[in-house]
Image 1: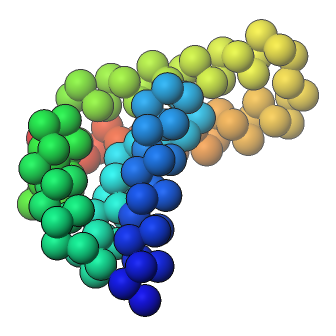
Image 2: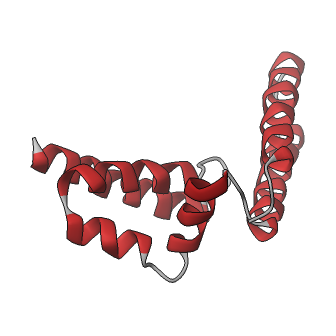
Length: 117
């Protein structure tokens, strides 16, 4: 079972790395999942993730106070705006744009109502 948890953690790290480049894929939720999986499988990987120069503080902020750093909030906002703009530019159907606006709007409300890390 330990190998399954570690494998899931590594998969989440890979998805988070893809999420750094692709605006559609979130990064931090996958890092939080990776921390969860590594805590159950490998103390070494868990410690590595929590002490990572870039990702560690984001995870610690979330664990300690449910906070998201302003830089991450701005990056999420730009990514979400880019996704919506691309949908608009590529003439997505109106019902798709409406669904996107509602879902992405709710995501933005959630992100911007979290405390600053």
